[in-house]
Each structure stands twice: as C-alpha cells, then as structure tokens.
Length: 290
Image (cartoon, rainbow, N blue to C red; front, side, top):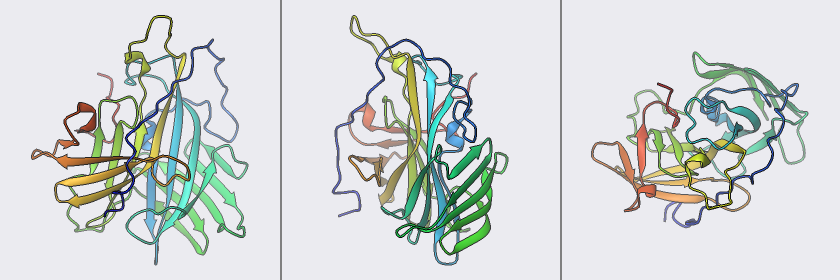
C-alpha cells in the first residue's frame, strides 16, 4: 500500500461567509503584512528549501487573502493580505512527515514580516528547537536569503523552491495544475529527488460564478487560501497520487488519483470533469489580465 492509499476522503466541505454589511477597510498592521495589497500570493506561498549536511531545511508559507465581494474570476482582482502561517522544518527523507517542523503565525510577537523582510526569533523549549530567521525575499531570483537557524543548523543560506540534484531527469508531473471546482482547485507539484515529488495546493474561490437560490445573496467578502501542504507520489511513470491538506493535526486530507495523458497536459482521475486536472502555463492558476 502506498503512503496515500489508506486515506481517502471523498467529501469536500466548502463554506462562504454569510452576507452582511461590508466591513471598513483594515489598516496595515505594524510588523505584519496584514492589510496590504498583495499581488500574486502564490509567488510567496509554498515551500522554500536549502540542503544541509545531513538534512534539508526549509520554510513552508501558507497565505490567506481577502477579496471584496463575490468575484467571478480572480484575474485583475485586488487581494488584501489577511493572515499567514509559516512552518520552519527539517526533513531527512525525500518527503515531508508529520511533526518535522513548527508553525508560527504572522501575528506572533516572535515574528516580524514587512514587505520582503522576514524575522523570527523563537527560543528553544522542552519539545521545540531554537529558531532564528532573518531572511529577505528577492522576486527577481525567486529566493529567500539570509540567516537560517533551526536547532544546531545555523548558516547564511539561499532558500529556493524544492528541486532535485543537477542531472536528474525532470518528472512529467512537475508543474501547476488546475481543475474546475470551488475549492482544492490549484495544485503545484515540485520534484525533490530522482523519484520523489512534493507540492502544495491553493483554494481559489469565485462565488460570483455560482447560482444562488431566491433570497440568498452572494458573500460580501471572499477568502482565498494559498500554500496548503500536499503529498504527491508517482506510483508509476504515468500515474500519481495527490493528498491535499496533508500533515494536519486535525481532519481531513483529500486524496486524488491521476493518470497522465499522452500529451502530458492532463491528469485524469475519472469520468467526472472535476476529477481531472489541466496543466497551466507558469506557476499560477490565476490568468494574467489581457
């Protein structure tokens, strides 16, 4: 049995906020990104790694944004940074495991995140190692650089998206995939080794595209989520298992199976259209404005 084979959750629960009077626009909070307009949240969310002597060290960033109203599409729509969680981890194998990191909220007094600068100071406890970060994001090189300390690992580093060693053949599953649904509808797959994959998913909600019963109004604000951890396993050269919302302490992960089409443009999971994933250009499921 594969690592994903025993965890199938067919039910997806998706809830919008009830309709109410629009709230006042939040002001940016000091020391956080909250309240700031953020373009392309998917450029920050997900995993960033560096290889150490005996393990791989990394950050995993989950970002939630707020959108006014009930959008039909997210193309050209202004998104406001609402909140974030940052996982500082150490993996000794090709894939993530439960408990290999520690989570920090962006509003924690231990964390300072302004524009492209991220600082985290966490003293060691009986169960958790010391964590010290002083990192700067470079959108040109698409990397975080600066000091990274977790436990005994303490270096000046450059964190990049997960990738295999030079010379390793690229997996055909690597890329960004989209499916027509209101949740769990964008998946980013990366390669960590010759035969190992990883990933993260986005929930891109467009409630304005839904039809509502008489008397029910669309929500006055919508929340978008970027960077939920996904476990991805290639079970054959043409088939993959994907576990979304993985490594959570509470319920529930969601598992999909997909077979790669000969043109490598789709991962087909069954007869239902919503079970099929389509490869998109670039690293975003939100199309650029024309």
